[in-house]
Image 1: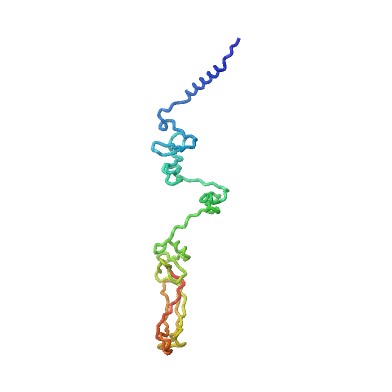
Image 2: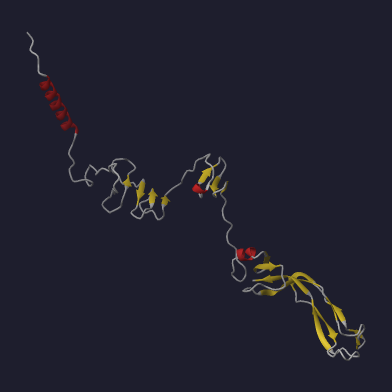
Length: 256
């Protein structure tokens, strides 16, 4: 006649067997974590946690998953994240190449500055549309040391001279804070006539009650002028004894 073994005895035997197997599978660390062969775990709770090494670095995630500190990903206490570096100097510091993938996401203000690969080149989102990512044009400077972009911002043109760059303004004089470079300018001829002298006035056999200046194209040339006479005494209709000067009209001027 078989005897029935109580269920409680079977459960106890199973528990003891499992415990004995566990004792063989687990080897107690030789020193206190994290310096030994076991590491203090990070939990999934909501509290702030640091995974620090012996030098005080925070949030190590190792490359081999065992404990060799390769610095695959590293977050500093200052909030900088490094990949392949333990000294990230900016918010994201990657020691090596990065790969940017394609995306069909629309460019909106929420992703301004985002990058994507379009199959040919990189594009950047400006908040309204994706556009090709191109290198900035290196800064250029005038002879005076001013940034040439200032010239463009004022609506002028940057021109190359033998000894450097000059800003060409479509004006008769340079803006405040600028000075003319040598005599660079463009002029148109100007006609001046006296409003007070008689219709015909000769001085030493030359007609002097009006004159017309010369002109010149863009270049370092002095402004043209010519003399003519005005009547300084309107009550005297016989003489024009007031000298005047007629100047050519400056249409462009070189400034630095």
